[in-house]
Amino acid sequence: MLSPTQVENFHRDQKKSIQLLESILRTLTVGLSEVDIISALEEKSKELGFLGFIRRPVVHIDYHLSLRWGPSKTRRLKTGSVVQIHIQPYSQEAFGNIGISFVFQRVDLPVVEKARELCIAASTFATGSKKAGEIFVFSQSWCTNHRTDLNKESVGHFCFPNSAQGMFGHFWPQSMRVFTQMRRFQLQWYNPRPLHGIYAIHPDIKQDGRRTGFAEMLYITPEKRVILGRESLEDLCTFHWENAI
Image (cartoon, rainbow, N blue to C red; front, side, top):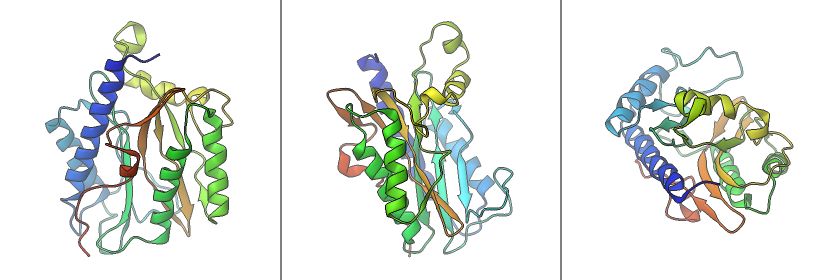
């Protein structure tokens, strides 16, 4: 059971994570590489009081199916690039989880709109009466109905606060990263556990050789669902920045 303070810490960090992402989106220009964008995220995160990232920020520019060895200095932004960014910055107590996909300086393609719709649909579907595995089944069915493919390695996971006690607290946030790799805390399986707690929701899709996805964070109890970092359900997957067309 999470305390009100722990939930508030996640809400605070998620709100700051959205601020971090939006601030970097406003600075994007033609010619920036994946490595450049990650460096900007890492630098700006320090200004906002974050200590680092649960995992290094994910930045994909024109994702393709060939093997990728991490962020590239040669994959660079150009008009019409399909971009995906997903970040998980952490503080001493909690962390955020936010992601976006978009077409740079162009109207979003259907694959981007589908990714946004799936994240909103999965987040709306998630309630305290559901099991964790139902998010996976729902996402699979949604993708089938919309003629796209679910990236089954990226649907979402349970989120732990820093307990500040014992081994878990001592190795924060690496301990959090280890726990999210355990099958029992992931959403991309037929997991029978009740949806109670804080969850990172980030179902990615693949279509026409592209990968796109959005990410949000929810707090779910048997009685309520709270969209962390947002004012209301209507704000899901919305970002305030100017993608000049």
